[in-house]
Image 1 (cartoon, rainbow, N blue to C red):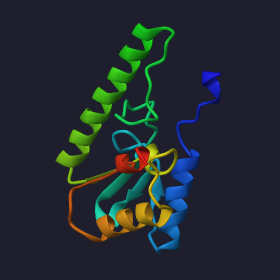
Image 2 (cartoon, one colour):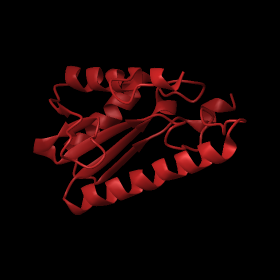
Image 3 (cartoon, rainbow, N blue to C red):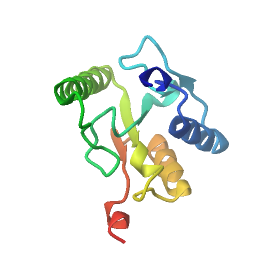
Length: 144
């Protein structure tokens, strides 16, 4: 079953790519020479965007649940993913890259944001000089 899990060109990634392209942004995909092979690379703006799955990157939201089987394996794997993400962000920042992360929970599930809101946040960030962007689901929507 795990062989079916994609690492790139996922549905959330395609949604973000399409929205930014429609807004006039041009980018490169999955540059292998950058730490973490960011999903979107905006070279002229010194910015990268990762579209992260909440489970695989251990995000604290309703989409993340610890598996009931092989608990030690999963805790170790996800902890390593989180640590690898931190190292990659640090290296990118040291090399002058601005880093954006769009979490899966912002695009699906009970905490999803309006689609245009996610795209607008990314677009405004790309036009700014702000170093970090994090787009996560709206937890207030989960309780409604």
